[in-house]
Amino acid sequence: MFHLFYVVFMTFLLHQGNLNHITRKSAHFVFYLVLGLFVANATIGSKVSKLKLILLSFLICVLYAISDEIHQLYVPGRSGQVSDVLLDIAGGLVGVLLLYAFKRRKRKTNQI
Image 1 (cartoon, rainbow, N blue to C red):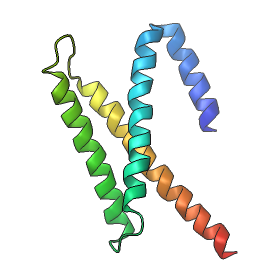
Image 2 (cartoon, helix red, strand yellow; image 1 turned 180 degrees about the vertical axis):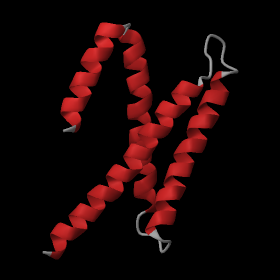
Image 3 (cartoon, one colour; image 1 turned 180 degrees about the horizontal axis):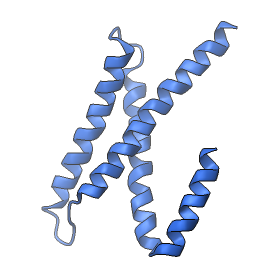
């Protein structure tokens, strides 16, 4: 289902504008999705509740996204943008939730 949505969405965007812009924005989302996976994976096995671990993982991704855009304000030729922070946050959240959904599904199949 996600793949179909992605293909339709990307086709729409390709007809709307610049391929370079789309590629850069997609890279933001994908990079933070991977970051979310890594951060969430680092928290697995902790004695803290799962909800707190998800929130902590998400918070780390949010803080990193904000700090990255602030950093870009001081780099010549770059600019920090709120839209990039929002894409980063969305990617991080998807990554965190994907990992926990995968672990939950894996745990259910191992119980059978």
